[in-house]
View (spheres, rainbow, N blue to C red):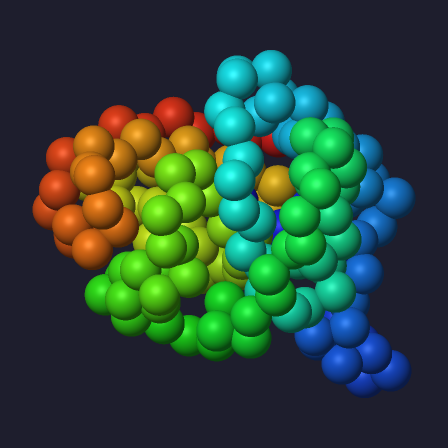
Length: 155
């Protein structure tokens, strides 16, 4: 999931500290409800450490009554390749089945594009990519593996 709509950057606010706008909060809440209504369970939530990503992840967690902590990692704020992401995810996932990752563009949309065989549309703030990956172990995840993809752009 790409974080929802955030404040514009300015010289007064470090990029990492930008918050969601009121509209961004509404978009994140709506997207969380759509995700939950699609009956996708959440076992783990991973988020960039940027405020706007944490706020987005927290709104999804609240919708789900998610009782675990959200794992924040600066890795998701950095530039990374798809292969870097896969290696990082393998380390984070353990035996978890269903994971929500909240990150930033251009990396998060590029990742969805690469893992879904290029079937992505525009990845505006708040867009969710649901990737269904037929694997028994996260170590089996690789670029080129057949992945079912559904995209939920904000409505």
